[in-house]
Image 1 (cartoon, rainbow, N blue to C red):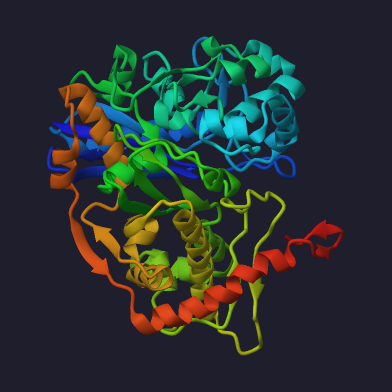
Image 2 (image 1 turned 90 degrees about the horizontal axis):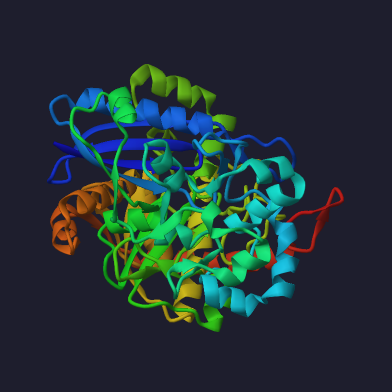
Length: 505
């Protein structure tokens, strides 16, 4: 017997089968491309994403052998949305989080509702990334898609529908759409009426871990599953990762390094203060009830290393393929011990919190003819970490206390980066027995639904074990604090500069 956790990310998906002790029995990963047909447009082909997920499910099933799956939970990227017909067939590519098309609808919401009221309803500060604005884009520019669409689904509810159950969306993922009333725990009539979106065209919002039903016989046969498989309401990937890393009490925060770098502290109640709103700090449902979550994040995150790998590290890729080593282990194997002389502004996609500036761009300052490749690599890590330190300072200002960080994602495998984070943040950073926390969190939601578990905390505390604690080193903390003082001035100083007729940042 096994429990499946599916994590549908922006650039790839992962499926993991866990046993009842949280041990990984089998896993599979697939990447898929992002499409940029026009400047500022970023899309996913939902058929390619679905094919990747199905291939992962089939591969994991083969590896599981007699440990056949009995439940499935889905962790999903936020905001991305797919229009589908009555059968769940996609009518267009999905528009992902950091696509810029939604920006044009922000003035509409300012006039109709106002930023303060919008935040009070949704727990999200007004910006173009919200799912509602992506739907409005189809309504305005692709009326044929708008008219044909039976549902507009995020990837969690899209896959539930494709597996044969009615589309349902977790409170946590619904909270990312900018259409959900976080206090009433339902779609906001105030917002939907102004957008002219019927709630019947959206998935039903339900608490994470709710039993939706079982996968259809046809899907089960295609996967080769011998047992009936229960489908649970899943969640947004960051809260799933937080629960899967044991972040189920205030003071603890998940630090996830994937395509996006994200720190997510658990909170005991909704926190919708002016300081939160002014700094674009959201507040929405955790997948672990009755807690809530906020997030600070940098959209470039771990993708900055992928960019370096694909652009400058062809020989490393070839060496990794020949030796069987991880290419990132090679890239990070010879970094200088001391802080670098370089400053990296990690806005290679868009900014994330607190700016939500889709026109900013990445910057590397301090280059000279003496600069070595390993300095640049370390400076990329420093840039992302200093950006997140700035965000942590905003959380403190808003009254959200973070005492310890639990690292997950691909970056959690790098001892170098974990120690660097501890030094930059001046906080203990913990590595865990399971770094694939988003999939573990999703699988626990499936297990909750199948077994009718009321309180997951004893099980989570049993399964999630701290393996190593990276303590901040006094001298490194001091030097990075000095570096941070200058780093905070870079974005404001460059924001209004002009380069080639376009804003530099």
